[in-house]
Image (cartoon, rainbow, N blue to C red; front, top):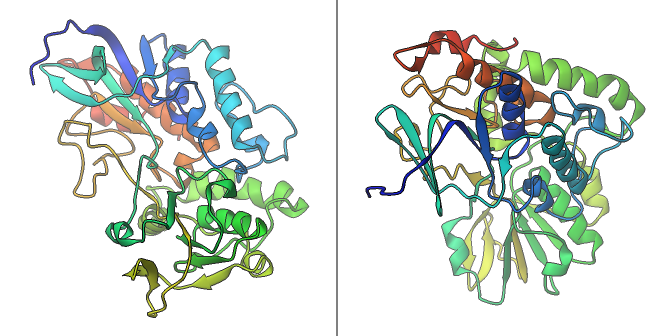
Length: 378
């Protein structure tokens, strides 16, 4: 469809106002490069506010600050999702980052030597576009979910807030990762009989709140292992990257004994529906009245009208940069460069590299990809 509106012209457009987008904005501002950040939320930080009520970060506050501004409060506390949201809002205000909220981008495409970004009544022409969004975009729910009886409450973890959304009766949590385990415990403690479905993802062999973890284990993991060892540049990082992207991390806060103590029953995979009820891989049919899908997300990047995605809908990038399309880049994706890439404390390195690429010398109006790939801190 031909656009007839006169576009606003901006050097760089950052799509997404979470920690990744704000981090890129911080480094662009330091380089005095004009930019704007577009975010679909009503307020900066809504990407955190709109998650379930009891959610806390897995990382202590000392690791939850972005570049240039430490996270406030006790260093060893584990912030709530609302505290994280408020911090992001304060960060944007403190550095006077130009964030436009309530703007949901519906298409990005290219015309001649610039990119076009459209969102409702907004049309922008930009030299550079940074897609600063995590992999958590569109809920992934199995097709057989439509066969569940109409009186079975179904909620995806993206829309789950608290047990008050559920009706009386049993709860099946499909997906046994960190989100599934946390929600299963909350529902069990709220008086529901709970089944947790899915393969065991493993668990870390320590309590994040212990003194040993706070002073020794977590600093080593976050500053060294996740940030320096598990990267696309190391054999170990390349080996674990596919499983981390497809299966996620082991349980961090919860342990198998916590689930057992709360009365949560571990079961196999949920593979289908029989007579309107969920069916497990061993043939059992669970008589539950609620199903919570903790089954992950699709990339949700179909609005990017450019040949940048692979057959899974993931961007074909090299550490966030697209060799086939210089000028467009990604930040905030799982394992973009390291395991820490999608973590609050790890996003700055990726963000600075992208900012350096945008600021790099240009030939024929395009950034030097070879230069850009090596820009930023190691």
